[in-house]
Image (tube, rainbow, N blue to C red):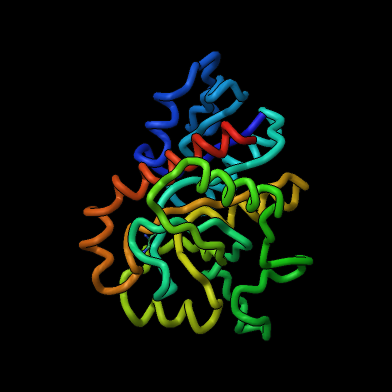
Length: 230
Ligand code: ADE
């Protein structure tokens, strides 16, 4: 069983529409839709926005739905000048940028008493995503990169530059690293696949609503091909 998480309706609706649904189960306010896409067993769920929702959702997928892998699809702000609006970022790794225990001497982003604070995506899933992007014949550029997550929408040049300098991230969103963290602690492979909706700068407030739909659509088209190839 493949688990697929999107934070918002727009990030999962088309995928759920494409599903032969066999069962729906609601837990912690999240509806888990089980069924088949491209003949494969999947469970698709809208987690809600932010790291807490995303972590809870991932743990439920693992405990109650016995998923073999967790995919996170959706949109993100670009932190890399080479990665433009509507391009796709496939995660190599993910980190929570708002973890800050610097006051106690830890480096920014380091989670005290954890073996890891940067979570590596599964290499087979990275290859699968790259191959699927080619197979889908989508007119989109696909990049591998580091995904940063925090409970903040990044929309100023200053905040963007800070994240680039401190964490060398390629894109920023609000759930991926929490999913990565939860999946990693449970020994379940994960990958984050995000289409760029804005550049996380002063224009983000305008770009996000303009490109959100198209960006979410790109992620879902790629997700469908990944499911087919899985
Ligand atoms: N998701 C899409 N764009 C984002 C941004 N600029 N900051 C945080 N999450 C996002």
